[in-house]
Image (cartoon, rainbow, N blue to C red):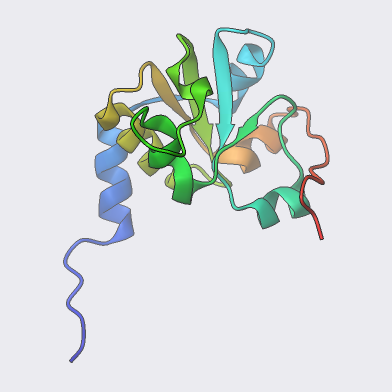
Length: 136
């Protein structure tokens, strides 16, 4: 029996982008030194090993995000209970749009998606550092 997918990723991402606020990479670069903001990298760890990361960004793998945000979860991370603003990013901005939408739906606020993701960050000249944590 074949599957009948009725809603694709493009529609899901468009719906997310209609519900969330976004910042440009240049805006995110300006926020880098502001302690009131946390840049959250939801990419897979292999992407971080390969491409590096934004200095000071917190790695929160997309598959654990809801569990890390929820204070009732045994995996909760206290960072997500702090009175700060959260800027999510992935490689190109689509996964992080979905992540921003779900974080917002869960009640985390304020939350933003970095439009264009890590690629836009690099293109805008944002600083990058190697990521070696847990690297085999």
